[in-house]
Length: 172
Image 1: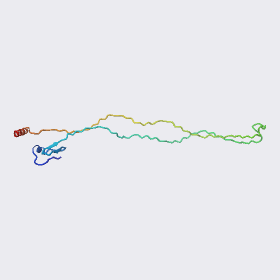
Image 2 (image 1 turned 180 degrees about the vertical axis):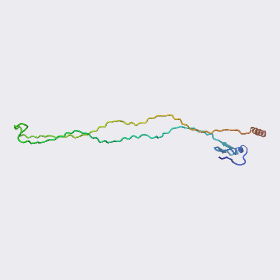
Image 3 (image 1 turned 45 degrees about the vertical axis):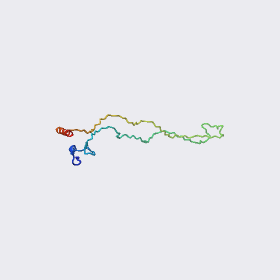
Image 4 (image 1 turned 120 degrees about the vertical axis):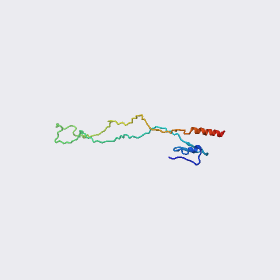
């Protein structure tokens, strides 16, 4: 990975930071000769939600099936017969009836029976489609990341003290 160096003739602390690995660091340069390195401390947070997922289903389709049916039924047919008999015999009597010369009309109606089909529908069974909803608890596992910083002071305490002493001498 890369190292960051800037400018020539760096002095003091800037020269010490010149060879610092700056992967994932942001360098801010001000108008002066100071150099500042920043390391963002980042932490992930996990948000667990839920979404609806289609898992298939059931399709119930009703349709009509026609089945031929045949049954026997006895039907009655009437037939009118007109018959002429010889002689003057009227059903066992030889006498001429008194109203023999009167006008008359006799009507006899023939009737037949014919099959009549009527249908009635009744509910034989019912198909019910419904959804049952159950809830369950599910444990969700994942990993979150965070940046941690470990600071190690590698300054030589004697060198630090000497610098302080020297600074004190100069300011006196």
